[in-house]
Structure formats: C-alpha cells, structure tokens
Amino acid sequence: MFRGNHPTRVDDKGRLKIPADFKRLIDEKYGTQFYVTSMDGHGADVYPLQEWEKFEEKLALIPNFNPVKKKLLGIVSYYGQMSEMDGQGRILIPQILREKANVVGDMVVLGMQNHLRVVNREAYERELEDLTPTDEKELAGLGL
Image 1 (cartoon, helix red, strand yellow):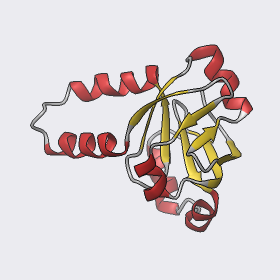
Image 2 (cartoon, rainbow, N blue to C red):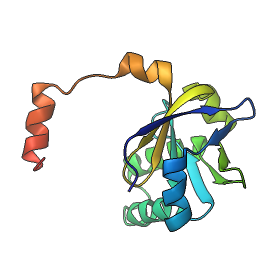
Image 3 (cartoon, rainbow, N blue to C red):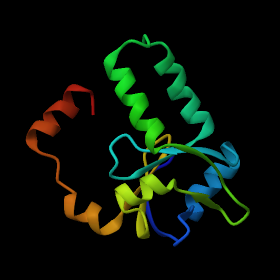
Image 4 (spheres, rainbow, N blue to C red):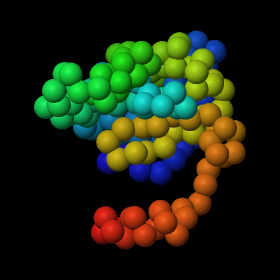
C-alpha cells in the first residue's frame, strides 16, 4: 500500500524519479508497467498496471451508454498513457498532463493506497485545506 509523501522532481524531459520508498514496493509487488493519467487535470495519477486493470474491470461493469462513464473514460484517456519505468526508476509523465497540471520541477508524490498522486508542490500547498466539521462527520459515518 502506498502511503505518505515524498518530495521529488520531474525533469525537463517529463521523467518522474520514483521516490525510493515507493520504488521498493513497486519492485516487490508490481513490476515496471504503469498507466499514468488524471481524473481532474490538477495532478498525475500513477497506477501500477495491475491496479489500473482492477479499476478497468469495475468500469467495464457499467453500461457503455452511461454518460458519467463516457465522461470519465474521455478524461482518463485524454490525459493517460502507458509508461514503463526505466532502469533508473523513472517514468514518463504524458506531455498534455505535464502542461495542464504544471508537473515539472519540484513535485510531491503522495501515496494514495493503490496508486501515486504527483502534484506541483507549490500549487498543492496553496490549495491544501483542513478537514471541516462536515468532512469529519461524513468520515465518521463511513466508520473512520
């Protein structure tokens, strides 16, 4: 399970260096194939291929004519590309996504349980909000 955050950089060629703690888990459990996408255009979601395939299996159960499914597929396809981790532990972030989410330079890689979220550090810190009492109530209703 991916958890915590690790600062890193995306170089000028769009390659993300996977932080060592996350890379150890990837090496042990997943291998080198990834699907890199976004559901909101504000950051890159890096899914080990096995985890992305689980998501696709759930998505396949929804009828193709469902408008929300069509919208989601359009978004994750527009931003998404397959990526393979190279020998130095780097993966390529798709250019469209790099430009939209400003994924270049200093980044934060957040562990999101089954995938990694890569966000521009400055932008993320500006938008980071505390949980509200309403949020806490909803989480309590979910058993957390």
